[in-house]
Length: 421
Image (cartoon, rainbow, N blue to C red; front, side):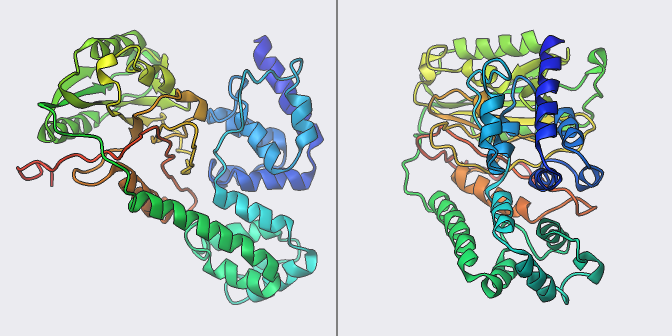
């Protein structure tokens, strides 16, 4: 209780330190994490912080998103005052990576546009956006959101924006060109990489453990109806790929940890890799057992660390997570590159960076197909998802890749035809 009160005092201090314009800047920066419907009602930093707390994106235990937002706003003195030991101990917490480079680019552009430039941009958009969206008090960040709604702007479609900026402020165009170049280099390096592959020539491909949680009535969460269909598909595919499939159903926290310890205790000498699929409810920091207790991502994958499972040393350990978050809308999660933390978590929710230990040969990702490098497919998944929204056109969802793989993972294609349509 004391900790919760202390964090609320921190948030109150931040709220009192921010200007009205800075609050609107924060709303824009969080537009990929929260629905535009929720954000449209935000008039204060306190309201925004409450929404982020309700989504498990902000807490005393993990204030990294708050620090990231203040860093983007260049409120360095406020950050220093908050992170002093007597105000908000960070326990080693660093900035999160939940605000996408694309969203930061738009914010940086808005900070460099003067009032006259803004008027000129509105003039250029007269034939593009409805006139009521171009009123005198409309800010550039609001214009960016309107352009996104109308389909004229997204992280893979900056052409209209670039042409406008080139006409208004040619110097700023260089920043867009730089962003495009950095994005292209990243994609190309993944798709055409000549990195070596992990060997997949063992007597056995390995074990595939599936933890399938459906019945949550004892902890008050809704049951995961339909999960058995996903479980069956996973069983069929991984058996087809040559894995020994083990399935556990309706595991609480203790049982999840125990089956993982049992998996680590096996002799994997003749195996190429190991796979763990978890179908359950989830929170921002991990997956939820049928007792409502959380198993963090760090706990999940550290059970297969070299010290716990030496026969998997230098072999890929692949975790596939389908962790829905109750009835809430899912916040978007954007791809980031973390050179020091070489793990790739991809799930229905944003995964904090510090959830992953700094050990090689891990992947936490979405399912894929044989014969193609996993990282290449995840890059294509990002590209495809970046162009999609829900039916209202207000929400997006993207994977958030991190990885510690030192080589490419390519499943050899079985001789039999794929068992799924």
